[in-house]
Image (cartoon, rainbow, N blue to C red; front, side):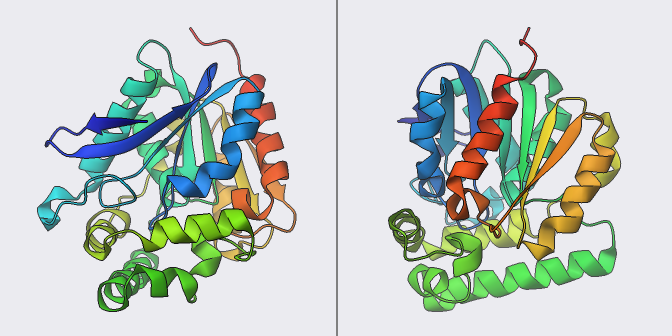
Length: 274
């Protein structure tokens, strides 16, 4: 574990497990590194290095009180610094779930030479339609207001369970993820929601310029992202899509064996990095 310092002086909780091809995964909004815990053993056993981190305002990273400390540019720069810490001398496979996938797309556009491959998991390229964007921001505001007024435990144990710990909240890995989410400070998650995840600019018109090989993964039951997965597969020049049967939004927790198998196969078949 390490503490990676941001450009504005905050510290980010970061982990690296194993050796081999570096794979850097980012979480969805409100989630923490614990959401990826089931992947550690299988990725390391396959000869990969799994790099995990908590966004500012999340998990064990610093959660600034000042709303001005949150913004998409700051977060993408944070991700870039984690990448440079984990893999300073070679490009890495970069990806994430939900907002983590969008953040990874932004990084691939800014620093394409550092991205050997992309993992886009139950995510999308953002919204071009103003009405769709407005609906998304309204939903994010409801999340922010809820965690501020009722706390993180009520959030993760209520209707948000499907999008935070998956379809099987009774499993030990899901309970561990829920406990980590519940331990977060509400103001950090709320600031991140309102100032980063909500207004994050779309990249749909720029997908054709991302040449890195991409694996698009979506859960069969994740209705909100099935169409987005099709769009990304069609617009990214070097992408293929895998739909995981029986999985919802938290595909890596719902069906970890199928998820791990798809990702490991993709990573191990990538062309040698330069």
